Length: 476
Image (cartoon, one colour):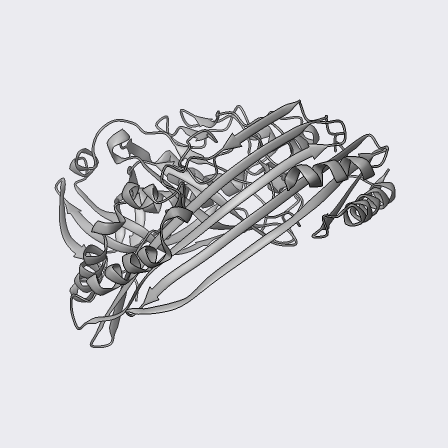
């Protein structure tokens, strides 16, 4: 089907400097069981294409769900009209786009295809997980869900270049809320664990072993004291480090944001173009990479939606800021080397600078070794709340679950843990990075940015980390 659309496009493509078609077909399925009751299945399919034309110094886009020859011709005409209108009015530095280089393809991993698993078997797994969370009468709400996505994409230009890519995503989630005597606490599993793959993702994440644990921990929190307040060391589990990396490294390093493109909507960045190569972002233990090559991570790909080849690059090396998250367009505008991260959330959105797989590289040692270095502090898991200013600098984050650390040992469970800081000072306080044995691959499908809004999938892999002298406090 894609090949037929490609042929139609080439028949109607106008004689311009650059004309590219991006076709995308996405199928989604959501299944859930809530309080032991199956929820009606939700399934959707989206299929369409975006035409991008660059000509005479102008740039134009047009999207269409009419993939017949007439529909594609109309989209080409609209994009050409927009390119003519914008010629001479573009932001300085917008480059022309090169032709796609030959033919290329990429397929994300899927060892056990999700589509081959019978619907009844999927529902039975959710029903079993739901039943197993009812371990106590204080469990007041609970549920389990699967979200599966299959996506096919093709980039084709009028000159014969083509890049075909296919992806399979799965996110299993669980939640359990416990309530008693006016107090309510909630534990979740999988909210930041979307991965590329099929049914094997359930094994990778140990989904089957999680229901009783999260229910038990929700009940533990009911009787736990509030998190202590004060300046102390903090050990963050990988599922909280995901949010920390995302908000205070990923978003500040997006080059279009640094150039001012997002200030009307999602804010600016405290990072400025002159900082690259000179700015001390964190302690020498901080090493952060853009890595689209980790197969199971949710934002792995071979080429971005601009057609640029995606390769692993350091963004921060030994604490020094070295490279922004900017695709080919922003790189030309800023005069800075970036990465292949021009991405769109759907066929009806243009590609912009986005996070992809942004990973904090592991150090050495176990979680126990990190905890063993703390005289007084708190260990925190699983993000519950977040707030960060418009320049992605000052922040305040809350977690679901925590334990006190005293004299190098994990102690009692405490509830409502929160911490706050300023990005630069916070990352410079990094004094311990866990080894590969603590390193976890995670991912979120909910990173929002752009006008009109685009919500994309972003991967993060990170170990547990230790930070010194952090402002910690409890809450209601």
